[in-house]
Image (cartoon, rainbow, N blue to C red; front, side):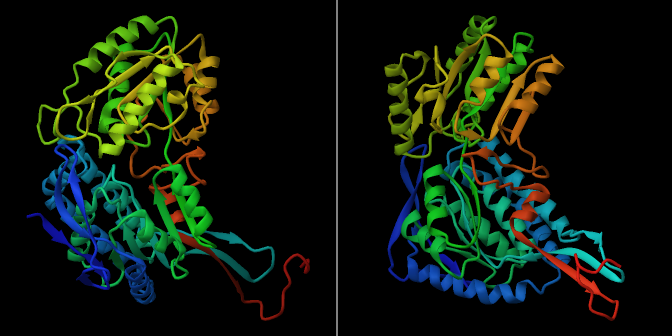
Length: 488
């Protein structure tokens, strides 16, 4: 008998109006973990209504006091770090060391945005008129719909909910249906930290109807979504005149130049390509290698990929955990077949692994052309394509040949090549001598092209995403003054 969990609306745990439920599965076994409520339009309406009422009071709580609640939440995350990490591994599947990192990222984010409660900076500037003062201040947006993915089930909700709260917004939070238990544990700690009733509401359920109801609701003033491009496009079509933030994935690459520190580059490719089983929007699914070192690189890379140990993430000897569900396994298998049909050469992997759970072998292709589907489309699994190039010009062209522009990397000792990459690669993030994953919470995160719509999360940009700028003029001249008209 699995445990059953409820929605959290207006400070109370409740069943959905329909009474419908769904199960979350352990991806290492394929067996149910727990049962959750499937929220419908009525439940979302109720959540938005109470959030709107709570937000009117929450915005009047001084921002430093809002920050204090976030700081208490960070302390609670620290106290429950191991328990939460094990929940992440149980429900999402990533190895336990990475799951701890997932929780640590949420801790860092909560601490950072707690500090923003003491800042929330606007700016002052001179007026063009005498005896007139001009400044900007930060204002909350209102009720935010927060829709998060399953691959970072603690960290990404923190990326969104922490700045939303410190800016004075209320939240209706819909997590991915693959990881509702992680979301429930997250919200339980927010409640314990002292978030007032109605300020945070949890509605679990599928993209449709639950997510669609949030996106379309007129009482929701902002939407923040991380997920696939197709869903992002649907949100833009249905959200209406809301503030919308979209982070929609990537097809990231690592360039390896002839002078690169090869062992360091190999470490980066293994971590970037197979960390989190390739289930990161920043995963390094393309390795763009100079032809002068391609042979040596391939031999060592394939040898290391073959030695990676697959298994349940809870096992400390496991290097690569399962994919999130059967559909993800089927997708990896489908793209493996596409790669073979396109003429790429399979060097290792390419098959599901084991009899139970959703495992797929670390897979490496070579002889990949930049325009092949496996080099263009996001697979979101442990599949890496090797692309051979003759020089830095071809490398940058190959890097920029995709529709996405999230993360990028170059390994080189040549500072000129490094700065060319920084300047010419079309991406929101560029690493030099490090893989494509490893974002820090006090720096902006996001991409260009079809990775999103200019969304930047984390750091001060997170404040900008979850607030609005108000311009304030104070005229103390005692007479009517007309900007652009009065000259003195």
